[in-house]
Amino acid sequence: MTQPPLPLIAIDGPSGVGKSTTARRVAERLGWDYLDTGAMYRAASLALLRSGRSLDERGPLETLLAGLDIAQRGTRIFLGGEDISEAIRSQEITTLVTPVSADARVREVLVDQQRRIGASGRWVVDGRDIGTVVFTHACCKVFLTASPEARAQRRFLELQAKGQTPDLAAVMQDLNRRDTADSTRAVAPLRKADDAVELDSSAMTLPQVVDWIVARHGAHP
Ligand code: DC
Image (cartoon, rainbow, N blue to C red; front, side, top):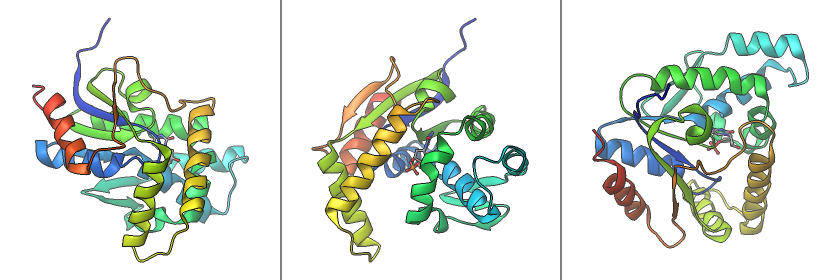
């Protein structure tokens, strides 16, 4: 039986392409809600780190996952009621989230939560597998890309704006590492859904990307 299309814009793509900011702005423009699934994988990684456990431990990981209390209010992310929005952006979590998000048990729990959240209302959701796995019947699917150079440059400027002194080569290397890991993992690898439209944003500004998505998909009933 075919499911009716969901009023949900899925924005997938590689790291550093600006999915979260784009998705948030598209949601603001349309008056829809926004879900950052990358933040959920980061929150699970922080919970694992704090527990002192490792991914290899069967029982403890399952117990941890069963008690995972992740919430998003506006653009803030909470773990067990604590605001962890800044804590999940550390380099330690950015490194740990790669194996955590490749673990099938973690994905099963988080995908289930994402589906429950997106089942009612209108959503803009960004991630890696939203159009291919989580919401295959989303009305609108965008696969947002940009050249590795453009993505590294954006990430570099973002870190500078936060007061950090990043190294462009190191930023590029980290993006490459995440691209390779996300697209070659066995479970839900990053790829464009057959019915997604690909938008190469290398030469576009953020407002142009937002306008493009709103113009193309925003009119959906
Ligand atoms: O978008 P982000 O960088 O905050 O995502 C953090 C990590 O989570 C990223 O390395 C890939 C993973 N991820 C995923 O596997 N599936 C998603 N739907 C979203 C993120």
